[in-house]
Image (cartoon, rainbow, N blue to C red; front, top):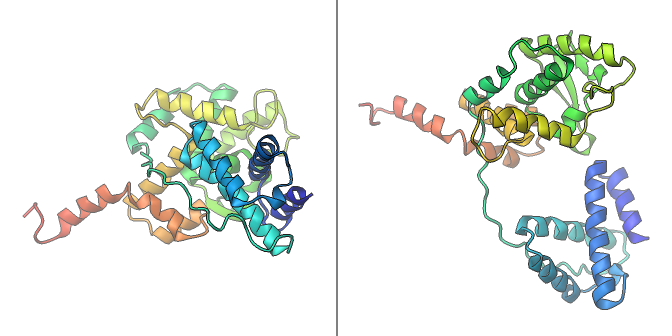
Length: 295
């Protein structure tokens, strides 16, 4: 089956994560189901642009966002590119496809005060879940890691001697992130409590039943913490990552260094965060320029 071959290629050659593979599979199966219902064929290898165009129209009519539609069509485009590469088709039916326009969504980071207030929330409460939840907030802000990267940190990835944590990023790319002293203390305190629950599980962050934590739990923890200190609409692990990058840039960190810490493959991805630090840059500029308002 072409779809299975494609997914194997993404897993083995491209090193895509399980989560990403599921997304590609779902997109292709959805298109296949559409073709079967509308054109009485599930052979998407032979699909033409007219059929793809009909699918786009049907997706638009379901009121899902243009961003989500573009992601689904990106999966389809990659699939047909693979079929061309493996000489299963001569031309891709996606040649005429142009991505739908999407409005640029400005991600508003948490302020430094909001981060500090969130970390002060539960004071000297030392039960396991509180210690773990606070550590999760601290890890996100101290390292800028993604949610999936946090969930998959193993005990052996923490190196107290070299003061680093090893993170497995997108496409299984490893990187090492420094651990500041306060986060090392929080980690040691958590590990003591963690070992009372389970000292055989390889993953660092566990539920109170000793199981590896999961996506929705992490999201809920972050949302709960920041709902108490922030009125911002979005309260997610990604916003903390955004805050990490923005605050570093505000304090004069080099863009290339921030890129390496975030695990971006190109500077273009990191430059998104320079928008939020523009206010700080203007402040520095006005303080330094001979013809600024201060004079």
